[in-house]
Length: 254
Ligand code: G
Ligand code: G
Ligand code: MN
Ligand code: NA
Image 1 (tube, helix red, strand yellow):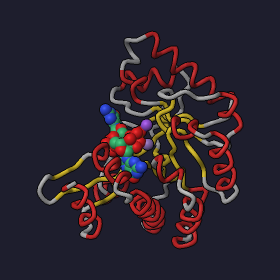
Image 2: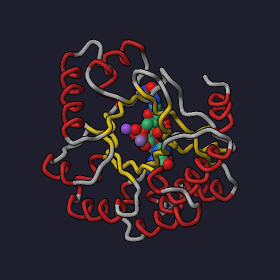
Image 3: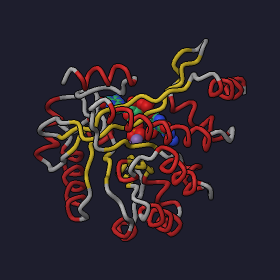
């Protein structure tokens, strides 16, 4: 509970920030987008992991506020990078379960576009597979509603939940993000190789972009390329970085 009230004040005191992790072409390593990842720098505890404070924000009823803040900030940052001559295709923003269930979510997304003036096609909203499949009828309507505005949708942590393929093919999606647990042992596990190949086949059939997460080694990258995964994200390329560091990296052409 202490941490919960700290989160309240932390939001007010600007202790929360967004870091960005590049999403790159598996072969050329060209950056095509970035994922926004929230960070909390607690004055006493230091970095509090999102796996701790996101659930806290959900139970404290702060997640809509935080999620809203993240989306608007990511929109503004893309515009800022544009002005600096750094043209990123899109920013991917995570949407929590509770945000997605909230009636006000579609209006909040529309507001972010209106407020910042960003082209909605340059924002990808990441929804986890389990949240999408929890109420697929609702999810389909919501996705269709916001797709009409232009925003795109990615299925996060794909492969960890139970997707109905019938629903999956009926959702207006742009991207599947294959969970890093399948990338982790890719080079030694034939099962994981088979899973990645199957997901790549699915993505190709449904004409979806496929991003592999948690790519840490050159060998993993090569194997993902061979298996038809066109985009990667992970420590091999870059950790999620603060804006200044990432901007520097882009400017120096690294
Ligand atoms: O690096 P990583 O530790 O950043 O993130 C851990 C978890 O926290 C991931 O599941 C990630 O999706 C989630 N997360 C990070 N930033 C956000 C955010 O802005 N909103 C939501 N809902 N989840 C986030
Ligand atoms: O759940 P989601 O996919 O949104 O979360 C992304 C999480 O993965 C973040 O916690 C991020 O810091 C972490 N991450 C990003 N790249 C790597 C990587 O190469 N290896 C590992 N182990 N984690 C990573
Ligand atoms: Mn994500
Ligand atoms: Na993920």
